[in-house]
Amino acid sequence: MKSKIKEAHLIDDLKSYYGHPSPEPHKDFYAIRDDIAICEIKDILLKGIDVRVLDCCAGEGSVAKHISDTIASDELKRIDYFAIDNDRECYSKLSNSSYLLERFKDFHPMLRMAHDLGDLKYGSFHLIFLLNAIHEISPVHLPKVLYCFNNLLSQDQGRFLLVDMEELPQNQPEASAITWTSSEIGEILESGGFPPSAVSHNKSSKVFVAKVFRQNDKPNIKSMLNTIILLLENKLHLARVMWKTIQCQKITKEEMIISRVVFDGSVSKMYFELKNCQDALCSMNYKHSNLNVSNRKASLLNHEVMSNQFLPRRNRKKSEFINTKDNYQLDRIAR
Image 1 (cartoon, rainbow, N blue to C red):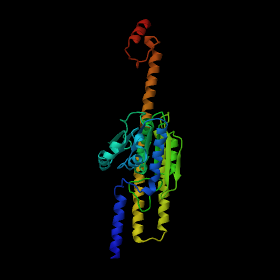
Image 2 (cartoon, one colour; image 1 turned 45 degrees about the horizontal axis):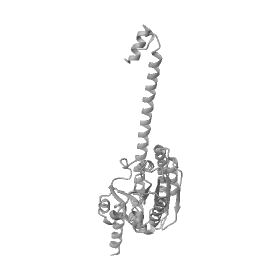
Image 3 (cartoon, rainbow, N blue to C red; image 1 turned 90 degrees about the vertical axis):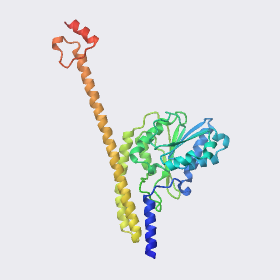
Image 4 (spheres, one colour; image 1 turned 60 degrees about the vertical axis):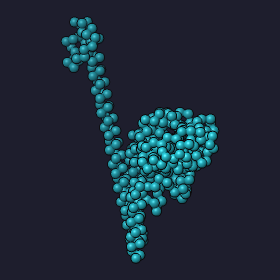
């Protein structure tokens, strides 16, 4: 009987690990994310600015609901709220939420990925936040997400917020997750040209917070991608060390199975994402080298044509076959 109960718990744990993460996170872990979002909105409102907010990976709208319950009704009518999520069920709940649709000045649910923001108006948002979702974003897309955020921010008080846990709770692992520490997020931001601003908060699960203002210079996607590759390689090394530590511990057979599954899943995910990032970086380098070669050939050809134009016709190179009016006049003078 006991073995069947253990098997049932093991199956439940495996289903939870490989299943889709719940859109509603545990409040004890993430109360800080709502408070920070509200403080930033109030700060902009106090400056007399009507706020346009972009909530990426909004889930079922828990942050929007907290904001609407906390901020006064007349102030909510100064907030234009965009909520995006790539989950159809979450999108459906956002679209059918009469409470949220009525509370804000405008409420715009949108079905899309966090890096699919190209059709939104450039420089039109005062506040963008990505809360409890970075661990679910493929690392290869993270530089593009940050680049898009910077483009969408207004020059007047524009800022984006990143809040997420530095490690998953031991009883809630996710097969699709790659977590980042505050120092790692700081490295990624700094390599892209953003000022490093990530700090950690010790909650039930350690959480990092990064607030970044709009940068006038374009963020360096290639540099951020290269930093992510180095960080993923380091994570793989640490995962192997951690597994050796687990093997030395005295744990039950079921716990060892779960630990092994989580380890294999985490390492496989990191290898997969590392390969994607390396392929993306190689593709960028290839395009850049081809562009340089094309520009160099064009420059050499242009130099050759310009230098040949002032030579007598009999001394010109055969490569000059550009029939323009200017060349025709030069030909007549040379004769």
